[in-house]
Length: 540
Image: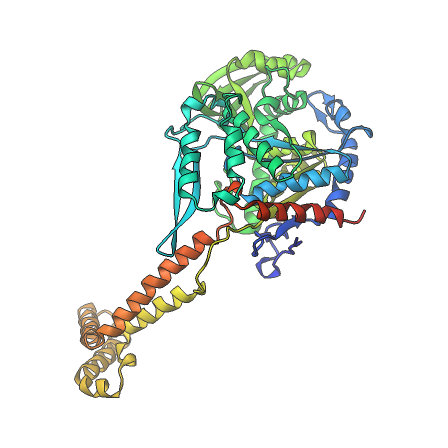
């Protein structure tokens, strides 16, 4: 296990230590930031911090929504999360580490499934090697998801997972030593639910069990924000209602936080790393999606109607519902569910982690990308709620498949291409003594043309025709010299082609982002043990 410190060479006065975080360079290394002992302390400090909050959510103090989650005898909750996809080991290790961290805290680990995201396509990829060179093979669902989020993928008839796993079994050479079969068997089990997310949970749970990882407690965005269901979270409903009612103020906090983040990092425009929330004379964009089982997602816009004491909800440009503010104040989940009917509200990225960190857990574990972007969330919390945000952690890992690689240095191709360019434009440098004598006339012509080009550039810059003629004389002389070096150019082209193949192979063979169940059981267990040892060694 390695606690990697940020590379100081990547830091500037405008960036932070979190900005400099990167995936561990060596296979089997784990990134834990901050260190395990500091994360233990952070979870406890976050509990005390959340107990101290005095802001109002709707017309009630924060502790009305947090009391049952922050009381002294309530177990500390560690949370990680991800989309239900073919996750790589750097994602998998988050909930593995979270288990041991929660156990040390006498608390609980919750895996937040982001089933509100929309996959363009569901695909499993793996490397294959033919003629000593690696390439990427894959199997994918025939159905393109288009607008459907994970929560609305209901039946195996939509996706032939058996065909995907059959392809991996037959074409991926390493699967005999991997837990892929354990994942596939559970996902395809006849007794499993038809829901894609349920099957994914079954696959991950069975795979974890085969690796000696304790079972996770899964929780879903769609259920916590499914306000018509009995398992929704009232705090989530209150947060949504509060932001809708205070849409103008929230938009200002959100966009100002983004503006400062971009300014510190010299990011131009208003679209990166995520877009600003928009506002027109009629509508204010909020950080939520509106979802529907039979339609695509729409951005949720709100128009406060102060004269009537209500707010109007828009699905994109289309008016959807008008909700009385007193109804939202009295029971936000009932008011939202009653007004929206078959539509559901789901948080977008920053609102999702804002909810998780402030209302759903005592410590949230991000990956590297999420940790970097959640610095924006920190600023939003300070600006909108006027409190300090709970600290978060970052956990990731690098694990590589046991594939051979070439010795080609990363800069070898660049150096070879520069040398070929030099050969093309300065071929005289590559002549031996006999060749230089034989080609003396061409070399002299080249030198005269260069001298003429230099003179024209200095004394007759507007003489474009003359400068063009001199350029063509140089190129003509170069070609005549190169004609006498065919073997040298052919060898250089062959070298560049080979380096290109080797570097492409190394890029595939060294990837850390294959589905974690493609790695060997010993590799994954060793990574699991490093996560556990990091907690075991942590000082109180």
